[in-house]
Amino acid sequence: MIRQLLTIFILTIFFSCGQKSNSSESKIETIDNSSVDTFSTQPINQQIDQDYNCSYDNQVLGLGIGLVIAPSKFEIYNDSLLSEKLASWDMYEDESKINLCSKFFKPDYGIMHFVCIAKSEKAYKVLVNFSDIKYLPKTKSYDFKTWDEYISQSFGIRRLTNDNGGISKNYTLRIKPEDNADTLVIPKGHEFFCPMEIKGDWLKVRYDCFYNDENNSYEGEPCHNYIDKCKNPLTGWLRWRQENHLLIDIFLMP
Image (tube, rainbow, N blue to C red; front, side, top):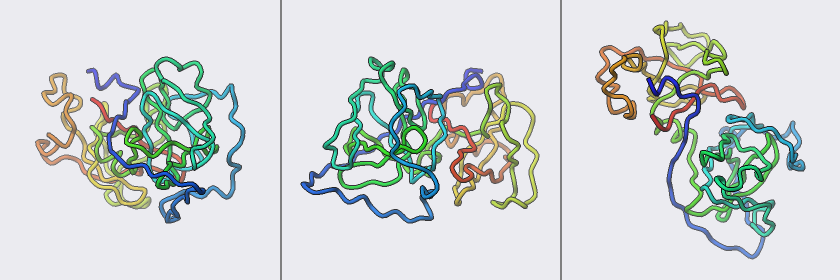
């Protein structure tokens, strides 16, 4: 099954937002601390390491307020006024020249998705290389989604897997969004869940009963198109994040 062989998911979401110029320093919006991880214990704005070894899913200091999806041709800046350009890249042509890591990094697939920690009228404040701070233009070419939107609009999710395809940590499915709630038994086979609701660090999911079928007539469709056709689907809660760690794989394509 094609979807079962996927170890890399491609996330492509669109939204538009205007841009407004400002002759003085753009004020970055104050974000509610309940939705932003703290940055007080780690250094920020360190010099970018030219030999930084990027993987597809890179660790970051915090998960911020959402993600900014850069277009294939994009610019990145050192300041919120966008007056000091760090670089301009075409992901498909300049892959070997890109010397920083985004949260999700696969430039040969057109994927550079940055954790956003704040935004102003002019710029998105983003994390690179774990804790360095840079800025992306806030224009219609740069797409921002909250984590709720990012997950809820997906084709489906599963618990985070390791390089061998196994579940990396035994985060269990629970009847309530609580660490001490009773657990539910997940059927054997390749797991796949449909996201239904997010409550803080917890995600309510329904088990995709069709995912392991060899002749899955719904393959390639978003799970919300057919999940109600599962008879008595297993429904429970998974932790989708813990502090600055993402605990799920998110599929935005079949």
